Image (tube, rainbow, N blue to C red; front, side, top):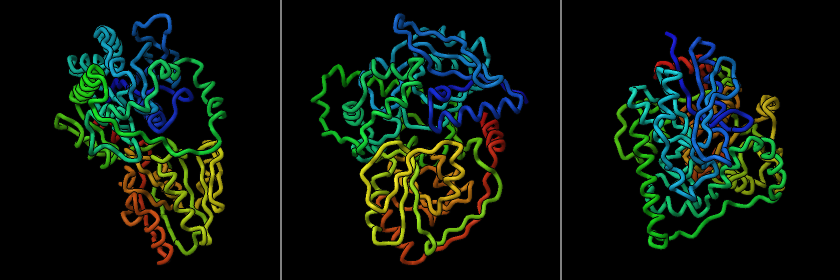
Length: 434
């Protein structure tokens, strides 16, 4: 049965990057192949001369996918934290979204993030009784920080007003966030990164401030913002949790009970489906690899600590991810960033991949991509993708060093077979949710 599907996401590459963007664009391509009518709504340009919010059709970026761009959307808190809470709950005329939905007439709306989108969109969709599916790519809305990670830990079990207020200490001013939506931002993003400090610094930690130290109006504005997002989540028809971890975090932090949900691992078009035979023999591992941001919340500092602990072993460590120089132990090689065309070669050269996430990562394509290429990986119990990894290869986030030492000392060996579905099959599972 042909469906009319409206997706809401953060935009297209190269302006937007990351797993969420890859997933949305890949899913739309696959749905078009299956003869569905697909449209994409996303936060677009900022008009510095006129603050009025409107929706315009933009150029077609994917064949047969109609694009709708929100001019002057709500701010995008992609760097974590909210400095101006009142600007994140600005009201707009319901007619803006009413006209959009009357124009495209979707059978279902698939939402991939709450960043940038107004509450009025959900209210109009609910009034029209259009089914709204929400995929849990991040925690924005439950938290002002999409990762829930702040001051060296995840706050998903201590999510109160004080957390929201304190996260705001490190937030970027809203007027600076608007730079992300300027047309030329993607062109200057890499230039900005080239000027990034060459020495790696641990993420800044802030002194905890009591609620009373913040102005009363500021506290009330955050209270209203928390209620604002909770009321949006209450309008979701079905939650698609991409892991058991994301389901647990949402259940703990939603005020209203979840009426309908499905836990289903996500995928992307690069995944090679089929039966995979994977072997790990620690007695033969001479190289251990980390891929990702050189950031504490990703477990990067833990990986470096592991390398330091094993400096007397006959093992080399390598890191991929950012084109910056970082202080490293002598047994760690910085391979920096690789292109998508080089990814296959990187995996072919990987003997053991470690994914040591400290934030409660909702999924994490890296582990799936590794298994798809028959690369053994050991993952943190904070990684959503642990759902597809044998339990024996999952370590407690604070016990990585102890776990790896145990594997090495005991000459740990494991062989396992896993069946990875193709992206086409995954797309068909999503259609069942619709």
